[in-house]
Every structure is written in C-alpha cells, then in structure tokens.
Image 1 (cartoon, one colour):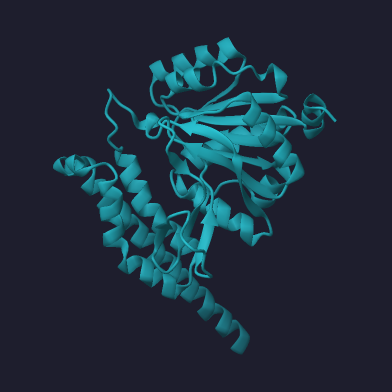
Image 2 (tube, helix red, strand yellow):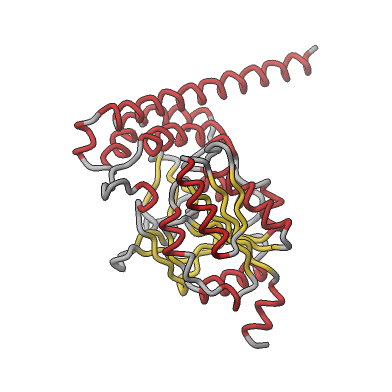
Length: 320
C-alpha cells in the first residue's frame, strides 16, 4: 500500500491550534504548509486578546481556508483545545494534533502522526521537539512524586515517577480522546498535559515518543513581546498553582503534604526560568508566583477537607 493510500485509510487529521495574539507565528509555521497532500483540517481556536488580534487571525484563517472558532474571552488552553477537537470532529476528523503556534512541523511528520494514531488509537503520540538551534527541547519527561516536580527525561524511571508528554505537539485518536473526556478545564494553562498523560496511562492507554520524527519549537515564541523573552505573569501564576492542583487530584494525602512542603523551592525554580532580571520587577514575577502557590495551597486544603468529609460520611452511613 503506497503512502497516499495509507493516509486515506487513516482518515482525516484535525490540526487544532489555540491562538492568543500569535497570528504572526501561525502565518510563519502553518501558512506555508501544503495540506492538499494530507487529509487534514486546520481549526484555530482564538482566545480573545484584542480586537486587532482577532481581526488579524480572522483574515489569516480566511486566506488559508482554516476554520476559525472565535471566543469572546480567554478560556485557557485546555478548554480551547477541547472546543477545537469538537469542531474538527464535526468536520469528519477522527485523529487530531494539538499544535502550539510557535511549533514548525512539515507535511511528512503530519502524515506519519496521522498513520500512527490510526495504528495506536489508545496512545498519546509525540515527535521529538528541538529548538531552532538544533538542541533538544523535549524527548519525553517524568514527574517525580518523591521530588515533587519534573525530572529530566533520561532520569532512571522508578515506581515513584510518572511519564508525561507535552501538549506543544501531541497527536491522538478520537477513541482515546473520548475515553479521557479531553483536557481538565480546572488547570486553565500549564500542567493540563501532565494530567492528561497520567489519566491516559491510568485508563489503559500508552505514551509514545516517535524518535524518528522531529519538529522545531521556537521556545517562548508565544510570550515574545517587543523582542523580550520574559515570562508572563500567567506563566508564573499557573505554573505555581497547577502543580498543587495536580497534587490535589492525583496524590495521596502524604504525598500532598510532601508537595506542599517543597512548594517554596519550586516557586523559586519557576521564577528563575525567566532569569534573575525578572526579580527586579517582583509585581510581574514574584507576586504572581506567590499568589499562584497560595491558590494551589487552598485547592489542596479543600481537596483534603472534602476527602475527610466523604470518608466520615461513608463511615457514618455504614455504621448507622
């Protein structure tokens, strides 16, 4: 069976991109693709940022024949992907690729990912992701329950660590997406891909890295403002918050306490990702990080209280 026949048999690929003021990146990374050779549909979900940005992405989508799903406000990454997948499914797609605007992918990789999802309908599938200079950005990663954070991909796996795949470029079949129920909207931004990966494995799915497929990620491109690569306040807030949201949903009480104890060190690590110069403007870095961690603390405490109340209710019901 030749390549064209295999692609036709695999069905349609829905390429779902979430836009938040990134129309220039979309024009550069998706605008030049010839999707005629691939049975693919592009769905752009526009999280509203400004009227000028919305006008620009509307024009770009019309120029390239992409489907635009415009939202009146920013609903977050996971919720926007969920909407985009629903739109693509309505257009006859049965496989999907979530793609960041700052990721460049070619037609060969798209075709391979489409075939891979058809062959492995219960897997999340990621290519290798490199920076523009050819250095590695993502080749799989692990979450350490003991260290309360992300470990290097080449760290030895243990019973106390979980693998996860980034949502920057991630392919999957409708069978798996339906089983998972999509992204958990509670995260809004960051850590929703860790949550999705863990739930995938827990429900009998698998995580696959295709080492033979490479895409290029202009790291931080979606946060680039006037040539600056400083992290946004949303980056600090939700990275510090959502680590603890994940703990509230997936970890035992003992592990939750361990993660809470390590939160100050984790906040410091997150803050330093933007460089020490960021600390000169604490209202844009330190305060959002601290507020995010505080919000995460509240989520864990509420989760613990709810578990205790449920356990007490169950005990009373049994003994009564």
